Amino acid sequence: MTFGINISAARPLDGLEKAFWLLDQHRPTHFVVTGEIRGMTTVKSWAGAMDETGRRLPQLARRIVSRGGQPAFVPVEPHGIPLHVVHGDCDSWTSHVEQELHIPFDTANDSLVRARVLHEQDRAVLMLVLHHSVGDGASAVWLLRDVLRTLAGIPVVHADDLRSLEQSVDDAGWEARVIPDLFTDGTRSPPGFRPATHSESSVATQVLSRAASTTLRDRARSEQATVHGAIAAAAARAHRSLSGLSDFPPRVFSPIDARRRLLGGAEHLGVHVNALTVRLDALSGSFWEDARQFSDAIGRFNSLDVLAGGIRAVREAVSPVKAPAEMAEGWAHVFGAEILLTNLGVLDVPTSYGSLSLASVWGPAVSTGIDSEQTLGALGFDGRLHLVHTSFQPVDRFLDEVVDTIKMALSA
Image (cartoon, rainbow, N blue to C red):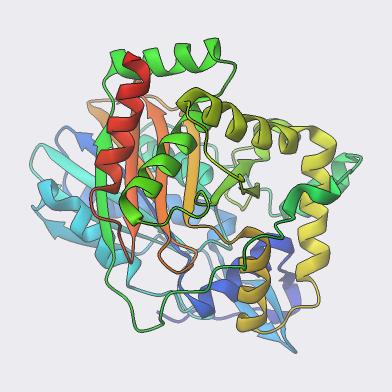
């Protein structure tokens, strides 16, 4: 689908927007957030909801065009979210996520968001697929929520802020500070990227019961750790156990939410994260000590001035970069890791939408292209921890081992 483009009204991509646009040309970085819905719907109602949602979102009436090596968002006529409908197959939805991860975006001509619905008479599975320059995992969840509201006939007011994260931070006047040694790692070389011809992905899921999820939250708090730190410790231990790599613990790359901390919980579609790769010298003999190590490292980056400084540092680093390979080299040096842990936290979204109910939410399913990368998408929904494992080079039984490690830590 091709849209008329108005170059004169372009807004240059900033910071992470540009980084993801370049990285996506090196190895695809688009991602998928999935919702399982219970209740009666029709294909026509889904098409109508996608059309209405897309036409009301100004962030979707844009394409990315590069002029002189500088990519920019340029406006196009408002349009609906492109929708692919599959009749049935709801029980096999992970295979459809795998398919979506193989379908690239043509950012100059395609919509930057698309959707796939697996449709049955009394249930459906909705997959929202986003180019990473236009959105992050949290905004995909809110988009999913607003599609369901529209589907149920509930009035929706869409946020229309088109500013980048960096511009929002500038406008808010946040003072910035960067801890110089936060990214140093003199003991290991940056990882490489998976072969460009390697395109087969794997997606698997696990969910912790409400009781186990509550116990994890309470136990982490009592151990002076976070749930994120506990998941990171479990992932690192599982990776070391299964991969056969024991010289160093696996590096864990964690996106960090900037919306709640810097922008008052803004819900508009956009890339509103920064990130940190934790590189531990060693794993300890104690699961909870490892959880505290990961929690403390992330906590150092969570202070407002350090987070604002990190956001501005990304802008400065990315600004002169023009080539995808150059961007990939820089990304691997600063953020490269064996494990990507993208944790959306506890979702503040309803379970009911008129006669429909949102039974589960999964994601993000994503890859940055790092060689042998194992991605864990984590979120809390309806009292349960949902985990999705995505990899183009999966470690066998990785997700099962992560969950087993968490359960063992809770029983000890």
